Length: 155
Image (cartoon, rainbow, N blue to C red; front, top):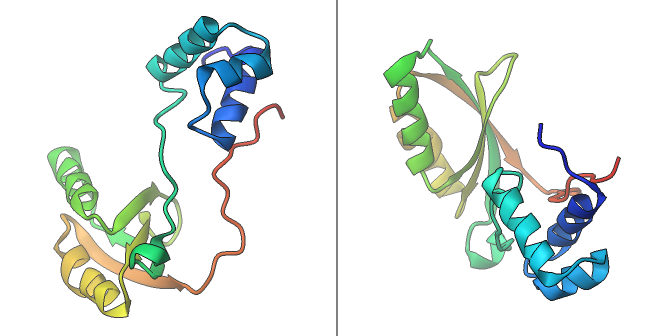
């Protein structure tokens, strides 16, 4: 684990609220120079504490109104077969997240589709072609009441 001081945590907190915050604005808020802030952010990027800066897009407004979680069952995958499976999932634009889990499924996928027809194509045509596919169960998301993007810094 990388050691972060209070200034690093304050910088992260600001960036989580506004990833486009300027170094000078952050510097004023945390009491450092612009250069010190730039160096700290660069170090956190190099250490992979900050993994990227992203725009949060309202998917419904751009035509992806159907969200689902898919519980995926797989045959035992090792080595190259496992790598091929990951590459296949990663290449599917609809698949936004892949979580390896314990329990009834091996992976939980978070997917976005244009509509139920698009989702049907995904679950009946695309996903069954994945290396090691054994079965799936789909949970269509009817609505989301809480969706956080900020981690609790400073607990």
